[in-house]
Length: 149
Image (tube, rainbow, N blue to C red):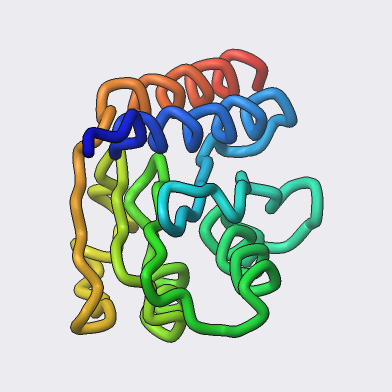
């Protein structure tokens, strides 16, 4: 059976969250967590609004998904996030035992890959889904931020 719900579909939902972050003056990173083609968590960066360096989109999504599922493990779940997770978020994803991570743009400075952070051995990773769109919103945000200062 062919389903309209694929990685591109759910990454577009994460990009909507990134747009929401952008509109609030947050670094525009968005995330959704999916189980069986159903979005169970939507989140975006809230570090400025909450004055909390741990309030990354992934951290917000992990908490929301765990609350939805009633448990701390996110087995059979997929995280769609517009930017490669940092080592803090990768650590939390490790402990959540999430099954799959799909990200848009690579973070060549602070991403879990360049930092050498390990994920859970059963977690699969796919990068580069809607990479151009995910990179573009970040570039626009930082250009705008530089121009305002």
